[in-house]
Image (tube, rainbow, N blue to C red; front, side, top):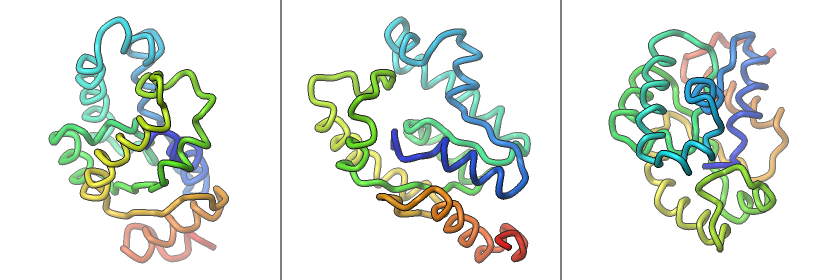
Length: 170
């Protein structure tokens, strides 16, 4: 979900693992030459999702380390399949009230520029949570733990699943 901490946790996870980090929203903004919000307003969400799919395809063809995707990346079946087949998907699950607390003053997220952003977050969560859960290899509940705690939880899950050597967490 927007505001779940994907970029913040992703950066810290990459640092802990000693690998690169990429935020697909930043890659998309470089490609389109403007902010995602401007692109949404000028083009459409569908046009944005087309570019997002291209970026995901490009990024998942090479080992880029840790990748944070936009909250809507898994809305398309093809994106979900690509991410599940080529990566380990970690869903940072945050309840709608906590997301609203984190994002209530954020004016850059196009999907939340509505009259009732808290209601919109609840709608998005209801719609997307089942998709996120079905797409994820791992689900990490992240209501209010500290970032290092979340990173440790993710590393532990990856180690237990055999995706990292056990000494990584030391």
